[in-house]
Image (cartoon, rainbow, N blue to C red):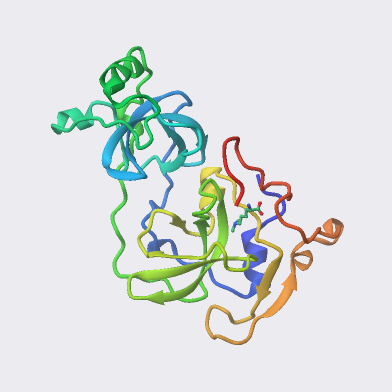
Length: 265
Ligand code: MLY
């Protein structure tokens, strides 16, 4: 997969520590992804979390599914782990006495929803119940510490998983900062968020780990003390034969390509 980024040498060069896997609400052995493109399932509508909708698997990436709600447009795809509690087999909602809802922004007249639902499910390939894995339990307490490295979803570009650092901790909240990026993508989340993973997660699942941005700070003791970091360009992170100058401009880097239908951030 990623020949240009290697966690072991990166941790060594940055003098930092990987957050131990017990810090995360992720299974130690990532769940297997048996889903196939085209399969249908039930998913909580990310834009209207009280609704359970029909979704189609549009893509497979590591232990995650790229999902699109049936009756929605192609601009609101979302990604879920196969052990996410936001997804379930078709029939689960009805079994629990609930009703499947049209997605927010249903493209047709609301009155046509019942017929649309019948048609979308007729002859559909439904993902078998065995493909859905149980969500791992929350670890307690919050063991994440400032300076620890991890892999985190870029919430502005949620198909991307990137090298990140714990920038701050306040109780159960952790501040996720993206290595080599200037802060525009940083966010606070709960330590048990499903959007953060231990170092090595992408390597195990086969998901694509993004390389860090251009301004990686090297702090020999960043995981222990808060000494002033020195800025080092990405060039120093690479082996000598790969030291071609990296253009400073963003947005056109190889490996940062977006799937179709996504807006650039
Ligand atoms: N639209 C931006 C995406 C940047 C992603 C930053 N993440 C990896 C923290 C670009 O193309 O540069």
